[in-house]
Image 1 (cartoon, one colour):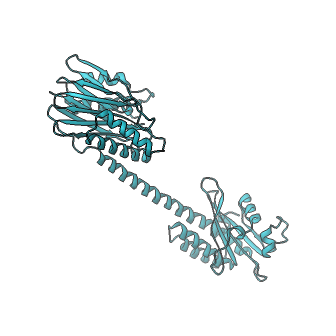
Image 2 (cartoon, rainbow, N blue to C red):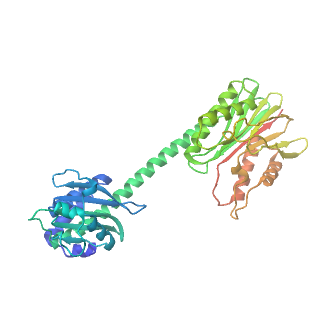
Image 3 (cartoon, rainbow, N blue to C red):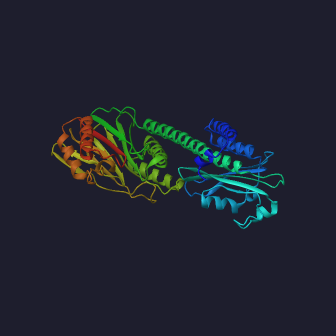
Length: 422
């Protein structure tokens, strides 16, 4: 019997009862509160000894007991709270079932719970929302005077239909609240990540610095850093964690702290990345790793560079009008012990520029799934090499955006430009 048919068969007295029950159930969006109100309403209407309300798991469809109690309000043990024989038949047929002769009804073979408890009358109805099973409501009694009528069945079917809608609304509300909470937490995490990035670039005479950081998701695994090392030197770092999301963001924060701490302690770029690698190997078992590139610049234009498995920066030599990538080297941090990182020293001339980036730049895709590529990055840098560090950064970002068109970022995009002005 459909919910609407059940409603049509109700007397005016039962319609008033249904209205009161529906109003009570719909007066709350708290999921557990709605479940308990629905059970209270059903037991009140049917004058049953015991009642059980089960909800179907949204993924597996398996029924899970959410409310099971007797008329005194005592909680029932799940293993004998209801007749599985009756419930299974209701789930299979998607129709309500009424029996006042539970032990001898020839529509099913009575199960152990019916026989042991001497159950006399059982009433069970499915809770459906657009033909989808939301749950099952079940009541029974062993009292000799306890019989369920067809009016009870019609009313229970109608109540089950209304309860299904109320429960589904409460479930959707709970999902929305949880989603909002997660989104707020992710937003807070993103703001904290952004706060870890330099709020202002360090200033060292003879240098210009500019950077940009864009997360493909709420939280990113990319990061960059730039900091003073005494009065005459500054350090820069760009890195990319192997994963995305919250776990990568936490790994990023830890890696950044280690690198910055060792650099400020006076370690060379080689020793900084080696020490960070060893410490992460000792403490982390997540399987994640981070590629990193670390450079130190001094006031005289000398640049000390170490690569730990990261995309090598693009080096533009102003005097030669030439752009080429720095050597590859080392392994990602947190991958293996004894990371074979090496130092590469550059003596910069005025106008020379280093462009640090993550693979979110060169592997950005257009609408035909083509990569932006190393070659296009070289062309972009050659086209804007005469600009300031900020101008080079902005030109590359615009070129990537023009290349991608309407395709959203698949990976985090981080770019750091250092220009030596002499």
